[in-house]
Structures are given as C-alpha cells and as structure tokens.
Length: 307
Image 1 (spheres, one colour):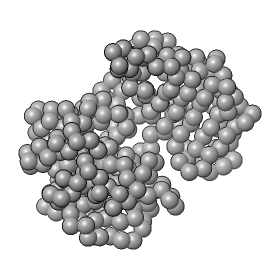
Image 2: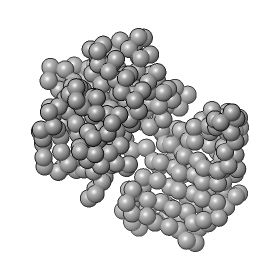
Image 3: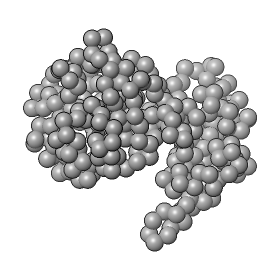
C-alpha cells in the first residue's frame, strides 16, 4: 500500500490510513471520482468517505504522480484504459474518449480512477498442486466471477510452477499478461510475482502471445488470464497440440455456466481441460467451491477458502 499512498494526495492518504488503523478492511480497490466521495471496498463491503470529496485538483495531482508529469509517456496505456504502477497495482481510468477511424485514440478529461490493489498472497495454490500435477501439470481452467481471486490464484500458481514444489522440478513457465494483471509488469519487468523460470509477454493479445511463446520460448507451461473468444479457443487448441500445458481463467459463476457457452463448448467437448476449478466470492473472496475432472466429475466438492 505504501506505493499507492505515495501517489495519492496527502489528505486522502491520511484519511484512509486513519480508517484502516481503526478497522480491519482488506482493501481491493480505491475509487476516486471527481466531485464525489472517496470510496474504498473489499469487493463486497464499501466505505464512502462523505466528508472527503475528490476534486479536479486532486485528479491533476494523481495524474502527475502516475505519469511523472508526462502524460505523453503513458499514451499507449491510456488507450487501453488503465495504467500499471510500481508494485503491480493497476489504475483504471474513465473520462472523455477520442476516436480515430472507430478506434480509441486517447482518453482525455479523466474523471474517474479505480486503483486495484495488487494482492500477492504466497502459498494459496500449494494445497491444490496434487490435483493439478500427474507426472506433468495438467491443462486447467479456473472459473470465477469478478473479484473471486482468479488472478491471485494464477499468480501464486505461476510462482510455484516456475520455482518447483517439493519433488516437482521447476518448469519453464511463460505468461501472456494481456492486461498486466498477473505479473504487474512495469517497463517489461514483473512487479507482482517471483519465480526463477518465468518469461512474460506483457500487454500482448492472448491469441498472438500464446503462439509467439510457442515459437520463441519453448515453454513447458503457458499461463493466461480471462479467455473467452473464438480466437482464444483456436490459439489454445494449437498450444495443446504443441504438447504444452495451458493454465487459464475465465469469467463464470458456475461450472454449468461456462460449459454451456458456445465459444468454450468445443474445448469442453474435446475434454482438453483435465481440471476445472470453480471459485466464488459469495461468502469470502477466494472460496474454492469445487474441482472437476475432464468428464465433469467432482474431484473435490467441499468448499474451502484459499485466502
């Protein structure tokens, strides 16, 4: 949190720190909207600081700190609607969009910021390695709604696979981090993850990135976040035909929700995913409600919180 507090206006940092000293509140987001109260939330609970309004001056101060007084430096990131800062924290932005030939050229007059706090929980995946390894790591799909811990689980799994675990040797592990969420890279260097044998393609489209890694980095395992398009499915098929293990995540509220989607059905029908892990945030963030095998049979049915 120190890195986030360092870029916020002092009066906002002070008020949030005061509150955190009194309350146990695991912040996932700090949301700042011009002329509206400052908000913090943990994915389910929300605290609004009604006495603390985020001003135009505050927005300018924050932007200057993020960009080091040069928005031009962040031009490409601004087109994507987010900026990744030291520590791997991601700052989403909203405001007036400039279009050129139907595509986003820039976001100007930024009026909203969503600071998503990078959570680097060490060891949350280790209890499940026995379910994901059978002489090799098996193709795995992690299912969960927003803010259910999918990326946190993937991040720790990347660390474990690339470092080795007990009798399992370290694997060459490649990550296509399209939105800088898994590794939180800044200038190409991962900030949110540690691992001895990790290679990262940051801000690269998944479909291109997976094939680039197959051709250039000879990975044993490829990890990607948030699949779902037909193009993703085609690239996944090629990766698996190359004999590489794929571990990925997808938005979904249940096993049934995902397997009935038209884009994913071909992979499910081919039984390419040997493990499907279902996460929930109904009772707590990171609750693993079930693990299925490729035939849809539950391997684990008992709900366990990984966090």
